[in-house]
Length: 185
Image 1 (spheres, rainbow, N blue to C red):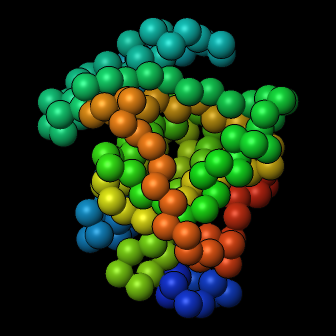
Image 2: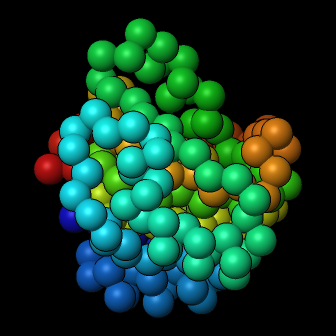
């Protein structure tokens, strides 16, 4: 189940609020300029489907977003618990950072946790199958895929080559909850 927990950025022990209803999550995130949608495939997707097959199943939503936001490129990324570099890949984005373009991810399968640091609050979003999140450029955030990652995600870019993390040097991400494999159960 998708989940949004909102914390005061100095109090990681207890959330100010918790939301599990998709409409509530979308409403709360829209207040801070973050897109949160649910998509459904237009055709069945078989396990192990190719990137082209995955993109074809969501083509209408992808085209809509590309037209609305000017995204120029789309791809699919997949990670499984047995990936030999999973720990290195996880560590890469666990620290607070920003990007010079939006970070847009649609979870075809599995889950990931985006945590945003905005206006004195921390927005911890567990994204699961069917969820799209659009984090605006310049937003302080971090991403966790857990120690046992599993996800297939569609990514949209304005400039794929320009999608580089700029780390803030702040240690805030170390104080807030990480994603655990049972969080997706």
